[in-house]
Image 1 (cartoon, helix red, strand yellow):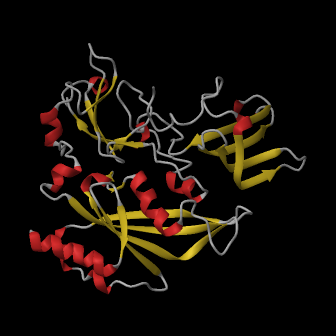
Image 2 (cartoon, rainbow, N blue to C red):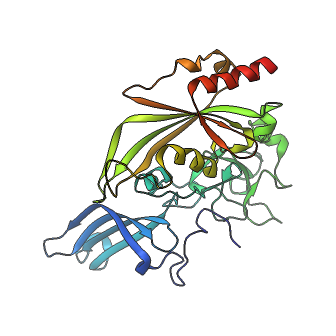
Length: 340
């Protein structure tokens, strides 16, 4: 079974995406018509009733008179549906343009996982032999075989999103394409010379440290029954002390965040003062603290303000995320420092 960024979406037998009959409009962002009533342009967010996947539709219709730019007379119509984090162009060295980011999808109500990540790396459908990052998101690093002919050089690339390295080789007997740093063909010595470092997982990087202290800062928005979205005028800050294996891609794992968020916003994130309205996350930022900031910060002094709300959580090895006070949070840190 496939396991990549889009594998949770439905697959219509003709278009390899969700059936149009199952798509519902979440919000029309832009729409215009010609004088005769023909649709000229439309940008809209859609959600599949079956799989819950989100799309951004981008429709454009342009009428070309006869002879204009050596084109035939008639309508030029494009009607694209982009999935979450799907790039407009997929080829190497093309411009990176992502019409629907995970943050925008969440702002319109998407609450699922970010399937475009797996084990700290990009998780897009495989192409060009071993490429699982976005081709347009690769940065050229250096020629691995600088003395070869221009069109027969091995080249090193690095993903700007996740940091994965690739070797592009057009040299026989191997198929032309991109090979990951884990492939035996990858030239480790050449790559190290240009800054490549083997990826250590978070536990190795932490050494003996088994608990991490982090801060999740979110900007909420209220979605009304009319689908109007209203940003809140404050930010919510979640200070967490959690086992290191609760962290993935430098942020809390999705299932852990759901446990923590539900204790503040409720299971369905419903707004108590607005019936049938609910909160969504508009933006999210995670900061992982080193030893010195954890030790030097007086956590007991952190209190709510008009611009910021603060919540404190301590995680346990059995998977429980417990909501605590600032004093209890400080006491947990003091106990760790005393036992160090």
